[in-house]
Image (cartoon, rainbow, N blue to C red; front, side, top):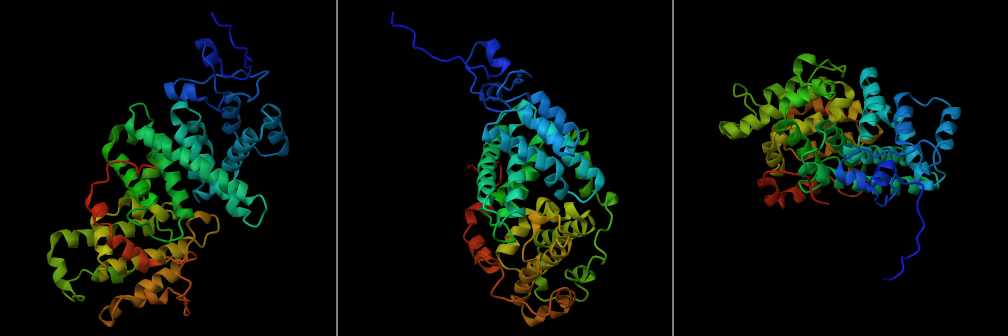
Length: 414
């Protein structure tokens, strides 16, 4: 019998693996063995390298508000750089990033306290990674001129791909927490929105697939589970009776006449097609909901609930669809003037101006309000910082026949 190979026993693994008599990979805060089996990853509170998951949970229950609190966390945990980065990102999320997700006090408490606690459930690794990714992106964005910015951007990218993998696994599994999945999808969508060089999602983009996945999860999952969950308050933004006006100006009346047959706009014959007319009506109705929603919900709600048929009309460059889209750009231009919504800032005014420039003189009566909301001078050569403007977005979309025709049934595979 060959001799047993010498090895060093680890003292820093989790108790769960120790009790099962298997080697722990020591991933923090939850090891891969426990993640794979969907069981609790228990760690010792003393003499460990990584510290305790329970400790981090308790720390997140209250906002860390002083350097002494931070020092306490660090003293109880590893001096390893990856662990310190994780703690830094969790702390930054709870005390700063979470408050950029909502401008309402009640919702801010939800994002800063309840969501991190959900993320430490062993089933919810995708949510934890989404939090870490968005927090790292926030730090990198806020310190873009710092020599350390690349470190955070690299960490953000790594955690983002981990979150996407976790969401793909959750989408095909039976044990996923629907609350955590939807929140993780929401954070991933914001990440993709923030890092996209263009204002609109390509039909083959990750963001497009993510918002479709959000819609699918909301529509197909157990409604009673959703309605009784901690997410109920977030869904309230989609109920017209619960909305309040966040923009000072009323919803533009010009859109109400865009579909009129009494004083018809050009190309009125297209409105005889019931499916096309319905797509326009729904898109205007959903845009009005977004217009009246709290500022933070208005940023993404339109894309989440907009009918798929409207994407087809945009792809075809239908003037009515373009006018509706230009109104969305004006709304975004105004709501993102609030500095905390760093992740939603694009060149919205320039995008609206470019869309208007695509329309001929027949549509002038429906463009007056839009033009009044834009700056007098627009630099048409600077519509986005990556050299990809709305025109190229439409051109790209026109080549996506297979994508637009298919039913989105799952997350885009990484």
